[in-house]
Length: 575
Image (cartoon, rainbow, N blue to C red; front, side, top):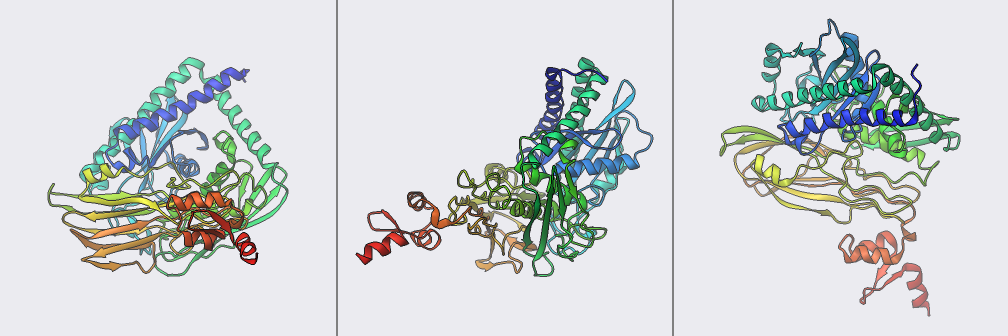
């Protein structure tokens, strides 16, 4: 084994990271779809040649893909045959280390001097993969075939040449097929960039040194994670979270989280959760495990990211629950919604043990909204995919962030100007969801309101969101954040989905509008302990009304805009 000095090890660690970052940037800059090029719904990484373990992932990639891409690469390795330079596998099967069908993975064997050295992989959210509704988020699906085209690992590129027959099968089964070739080539090009940069790194430092560095970095990540876990008091910690409904049966689904901490290890048990559901809120095991990984990474963000990071995290398979979906259970809501409820349950359990490191629940929904239709002006079909931000939970150091991205990723809302340019829509409103921040000594951040008007043609609207029934949890005495709300105006008549945040194929025509209000974050600690001056500032900014200030914080604003608590007001009146 090569002797590694700290400087060389650090340089190689940064070099591996840079390879992944360049893949991310190449993917974003060449992708056609706004969901990738603008919203950044994608990820790239390097994986072990024999077991698919994570070696490095781009800093700009979605955290939820950290675990799933590792599991997905393992499934490709198990099925890979007759590998050649330039081969690229395509796969989106949720049950083979995936998420939902719209997250399409490319996996490429990386050779150095004729020998297989590692695997390069990326995931991109395609705006459509077929199925019952435009965009794939079928709220009423009862089997995976209704959600879109399911691809096992197959070679889309053979020795660098695209297989036109496989491509034709894919394009024949998805909407807006003529627009997908740009994303496909962008995804493959990103891996080609990674191949080039990784080769340069190996040429400079040598395969033996890089291999030794990867092994050492994994060992150190595991060591650092165990050191952080050791700070948690030994014991059993319990939390829970609820999914509004599965989209078919209008009843909540419960996630039961039990976390046992022993020494330097954490053991996760979700076996008491609700059974498999009829609708698309089942979670495949890769997503379930990845959700736990990302939750812990949120708590200990300074721990480097590779397979060693996960070694001290032991997750019992929640077989027999909706968190271990098996074919043919529908799963379109697993990565974007259920994953965030799992993370929320982890946060809720551990906040009792390490309150100074944790926070109240964030908005916890990606707000998946799809509008698919025909634009008569440009004589073409389209699928518009919208994700939106929400409030973060309060924490020991301050209030939660407003309009932050979802728990599972760094994806941002596509700029409204871009969506108005690409699609026949007009955003009539984009504002702060006032009053949605959960009350607390440190209040939650606020969600957003947006209102979309269809300018021409007809379209179908579908959404798979959450937190429409239960707001994000407050902790340590804090109140829950505001809920998600959806309202469609059809020919001047309001329509509110029965499942509040889940529905599909709502018909709209020119002039109709869709209004969404996203959740606010939960509050942290007793809201009556919040400084009255901070409440006054919030009211002056329009975040809360004076009535809400009294009800939620016990703060009274008088005509001079001065503040009093309920207690001081009683004393003054008594005198």
